[in-house]
Amino acid sequence: MTGLARIIADMIAEDGPMALDRYMTLCLSHPRHGYYMTRDPFGASGDFTTAPEISQVFGELVGVWVAQGFAALGAPRKFALVELGPGRGTLMADTLRVLRKSQEAVKAAQVHFVEMSPVLREAQATRVPDAIWHDNIASLPALPSIIIANEFLDALPIRQFEREAGQLFERRIVAEGEGLKIVKLPSAFPLSARGEGVWEDHSIREAFTTALADHLAKVKGLALIIDYGHGHSAFGDTLQALKAHKPCAITDFPGKADLTAHVDFESLARGLAKGGLKKTALMTQGEFLNAMGIEQRTAVLRRTVSGEAEQNLVAASTRLAHPSQMGQLFKVVAAASRNIELPYPFGAR
Picture (tube, rainbow, N blue to C red):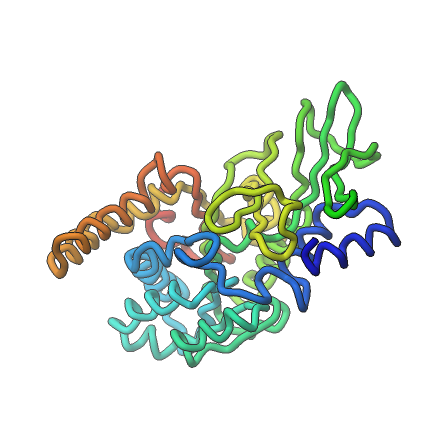
């Protein structure tokens, strides 16, 4: 057992089988043993790679969108440029490089990071030293805001239920021997969805997006949310664990493997609407990047490299935008508070 597995086993012995949302929270953010609290998980030496680490073009195109968002806000004298779960700070560094082409925009931008990991805060500080850090969104400033969340919501916890032959069960964690395992226990959860199979409850994520939208509705602002998942609520088991870029069982390495589940973008839209953001738009990552000019930006960068570096550049852009790779599975949501127009390419749809 890992150190965290022993702690979880003790909790189960005292409180009974553990719901998956509690298990995910402990695995990812336990103060001493939590996955994100103890490591930099990105890149070849880590467990997974996110879009900003694949190519600088990703963050640059987000930067173009932020520049348009600044104009849509009316070019305020000061605005909060917020990133949720900013990884190593790579996306924000690339975004700011684009914003520097407008002295007015970069002077107005006040960077805020919502990050709980002390390890990742150190990495972020090397790339964006002037950032202001927050443990959660409650302490964000009352300024006009542009909020970016790339692969953030997929790590927020979920619960799983399973309807089988008309009976409803909840998947929970129990201790067995020297390890942990998932079991199905009868449940009285008020599941209204019709059908059978695994149903993932996104209530925590929906509540988070409602709070985020409520903040933006009060301060005036925009959000750009990028993640992998499905456009409509549906049955299906999407909870997964990754270690060293390979899938493993979610109970194999508590605190030492990444845990995520697909984002339900229909539930996400409900959360945003409850918080007062009525203007939302959804497209695939491929559609977004192509509209923002990934081919053109890649062509410009190709002039500065050759050989293997050029091949890697092209491969990275293809990985980000092609439907058979990240282009279709990943979705992009834009949302705006009242009287703010959604920037291109959303406002044109």
